[in-house]
Image (cartoon, rainbow, N blue to C red; front, side):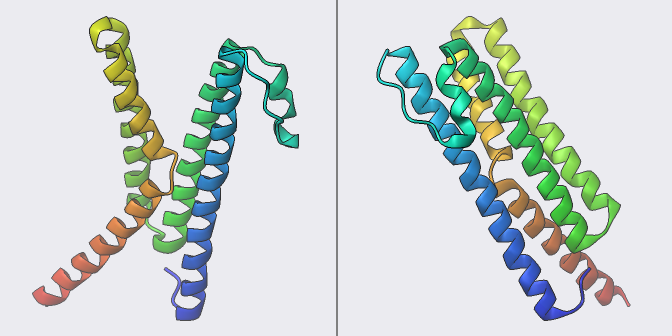
Length: 167
């Protein structure tokens, strides 16, 4: 763990800013893709895309849906890697990296199980999709990495206080 208090504060602020920026960028992309999909589906005028997403204006609706799925997994992986980097930077213990990996893998697995249940039980499909989508959104936001960092920080301090009381 970083010992210098000013360096630690700067790194915490930069980490928070990085997570916020990644979340904002993700939101920007998905808002544009959703607006584009709406325009294509309802035959409305196409929205002028930002330069780095210029190729999107040539896509049909099925391709836009596939692109949204690709971005979903890319941002999930991005936030997972950012969470791993932050946990590694601040705590430097493999057990916490393992915990982070298990949380992200578990969230993905539970989301996937809801999607599968929606395919198997058609009356539950809309609900399963909404639950699955909500779970995957948690992994694509700054919320989960920040929750992990706070939980690990609290665990370390509670654990060290418990050990001090035993001595």
